[in-house]
Image (cartoon, rainbow, N blue to C red; front, side, top):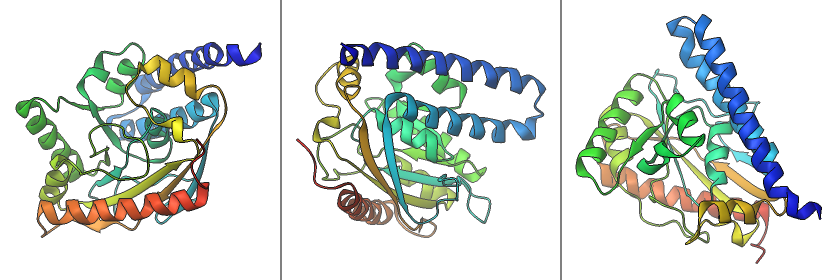
Length: 262
């Protein structure tokens, strides 16, 4: 009986947590000075992401380089330039993980902006929305990423462009790497592996995907790699190196979480 209630209960928890944290962010923003606002959003974003992981029953094993003691990866390097975070994309939970542990503005597909609740929260924290079918949208987002990086804000992309099943890292889209080269930013490669093979978001409704994942706890490993400096290099060079590094990190994450359970 309880198993049938997991999804509605977790959905209710998600909605309650989202509205509560959003309300707190708006309330604190009223009294925050402009220089404090960026730090406030970072704090809210991490707290929100970690809360979502608890609500949905996601256990994340963190490993690799660059993570602080609290598990977060700073979005700004020692020079004051923002970092480009690059990760493989497998499930809806990837977004929660990125929110929880990466100090970065997300780059997401355009239709997410119109989603109830999620879209509102995403817009509030500065998510950059891109329509991959529109050249003008892609160019605008690349310019926005370049500006954000140059001003010291971290940016997070899933350069495969969509979700895939399995551990193979597919070819990367170049947009984020163009921005990193132009801004002279560090690129931080990350790799994830889910214990459950059915965690992948495939050809199904989003609600079906979330309902399936909600049936039991989900275990995932996240590995962070050493930064790659994009300054003075070509987009193709850093794109291919990053993809190879992400693949190696996915393989390491798979070793930590164990063989995929089918």
